[in-house]
Image 1 (spheres, helix red, strand yellow):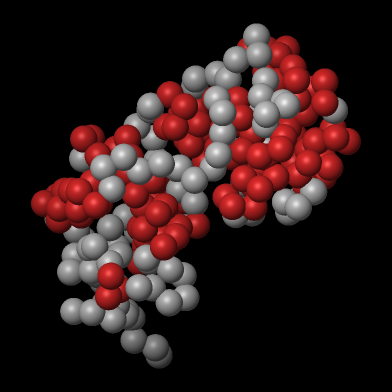
Image 2: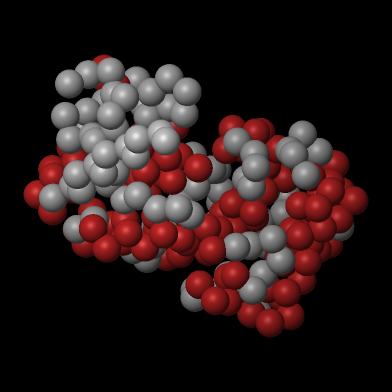
Length: 221
């Protein structure tokens, strides 16, 4: 039988505080990398970013958003035209359909205004829990934790917030991260996963929290 891997030691509250203090000192006001003009275009950008890169979404929306920055303008533009603008993004046909459908629902049920509750946001076509969390955080300053592949990897690899699925990791991060850091926490973790704690070749030598990390395979002690 293959021996069981040893259980990794959990982070202490002091270590969590230290890690986010370092993230804060290095980047006090982290910004999301999806370009947007208002809460509505942020919502659309996040929906478009599913299984796509932020850079790829930005390339497509730089021409789209200046002419369709409200639900009504997007509906007036029409699904076929939206498809043409976003055809460089993966799953663009389904996403164009969702963008029109969510815009119509915003007009019909919310007076054309992006709602401010998770349940209402999740009711929109193409929007899931992660989308809702991003919009609540970035547009409305809520202390939400949006878990994408980067945050999921960092939470598990470091053992800061291990979990079998994204909801487990989200809830654990919300539990352990001090409130003073929650507004920007998901940006710090996304950026850390995107540029330092890479999937294939993590850059442990430049990692701000390499001494705190519990990953058995880290390349620095």
